[in-house]
Image (cartoon, rainbow, N blue to C red; front, side):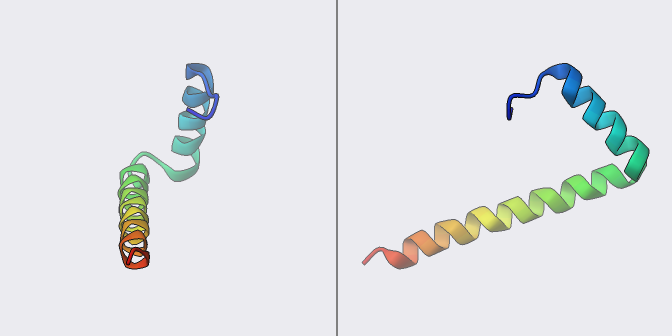
Length: 52
C-alpha cells in the first residue's frame, strides 16, 4: 500500500487518533468511503455515456 510498511501505518494511525480523537475517526472513514463510492460511480457513468 503506497510502499508503506506496518510501522509507518501504525505511526500514521496514532497521529490520526491524537489529531482527530477516537470518536471522530469512524465518521471520517464513513465520509471517505461515501466519497470514494460516489467517485467510482461517476467514473463508471462517464464511461457509459462516452460509448456509442
